[in-house]
Length: 462
Image (cartoon, rainbow, N blue to C red; front, side):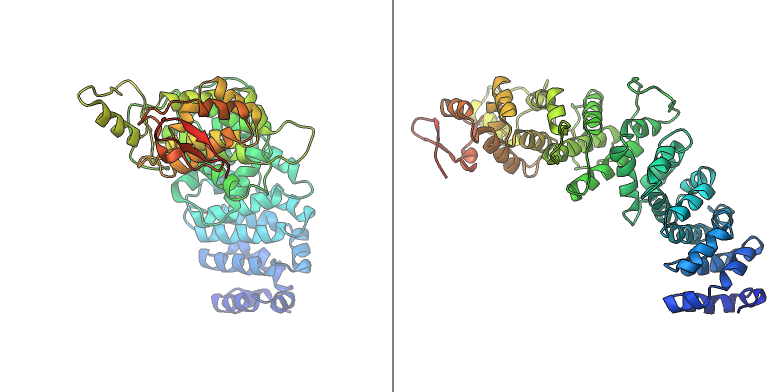
């Protein structure tokens, strides 16, 4: 059995740390856990760091040590150490959070004890530490505590009055210093999407906003870097793991409402020659909300009695809005150049039309429409009724300002025509007006071929 004085010097602690790396070593050192906890408040910064790292190792998958840790009120002692000087000693805060994370992994009783020791004060203080080395384990601890039995209640706490400042601090830190592990993305997705708190969190990210506003209340939003960062992370999470996530109707409608709002604030007369992220918060919110809508509309809902998010979006006028945005844009660059060449001195004037605010904006609009059209006769008919067929045909071109526009345009037209006799008939009757429509629309699965003599397109089987 180790005596307390044997773990009081740095050399011995270093040796114990090395021994605690193996399961056998952790089991053999179980007697050291209580003395290590007792000595935490009296430790110098260096010894405190070593003792917290020793606790972290001792709690990694060892049942006996995890139980002893809870019985000795270890979470409270370690949480106090974590916030003793987090900004001055981020390594100490990191080691403390790693120890608490290992303890929380032991089960519901441990998660509850860790949460009680941390929420809300210590979590809020740690969320304000602008160090990714602290942010990653902090998100790991929160995500672990908000999982499993009892996790739903703690997640609810996190998404209300006492918890929202913690989430705001986490987003603020991440938007400034970044992160390395995936805990942050899952935490933000869990709170924003699965718990349907997207609009509440988004509003809380506004400087000086009253987070007690009632659901549905309008508030003036001045978009900032935190808004753009949140949407970017949610978009990445949804795009990379579409089968592992669940998208609610409220989240989908919240994103659409946000997109309509930000579209009214962006200056469409100024072209930013950059893809996302542009560094302009409102433009980035516009773009990332489109990317979210694109993936939401491509997401296949599991069979259920509830309405799919894409259907809810259709009922609230998504396609009509997107076609309006697309129609208001100046033509793609290749068409503008062709029109200029064809009209000689009678140059077309585009001074009053809108430009793409970032590289890829037109493509993203077309991508959302393309996904909405997939296997939906209702949307196919809506596009025709809104005189959108010619508009989508114009997007089947290479555009240097919108990489992959041609591919998304072809996909949209394929989905527009597939299985829809009315749309096929309307396309077959179109008179080709070069350069508004180019021969690049010829190969779209159903194969629309251009008759160069008559100038009419004709439908041909694959």
